[in-house]
Image (cartoon, rainbow, N blue to C red; front, side, top):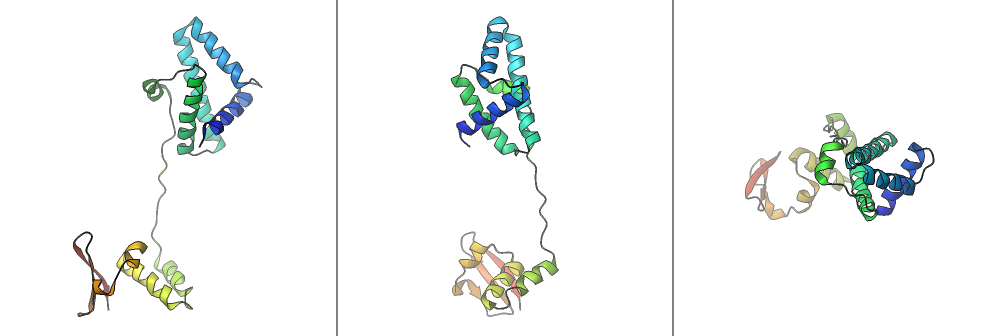
Length: 172
């Protein structure tokens, strides 16, 4: 996310929300208010910035994108003589919260379908079965060596030397 993109978004916001005015017009008005009354200036500045945040949320931009764009917009505004303070931003502006996506494990049927789709590739089937039954991640499974496996009993054990723990994986 570059400053140019943030400036462009802010320009679009100003044009749409302030009936065709330009960014330069808004900056000039803010500077004029700043000279007249400092308290009114801060209220106006942070109201404009909050409106910009809300406008971006309505447009469907993600919270991370809005925060990154805001950071770049802040640098641009500083360049134009409009200073914002971190403490004031925390106090006056409200950004959207991070949305946690719910994750669900694969059902047994879905897992079975995935494995069966690789019926022409038994090596891939074995790999998928090993991942599913052992709980290993792909990188861990790919790093396995023959010496890491113990075939002496009915259970196959894999020794993880990085964490110095032993995991029991497959019942045969």
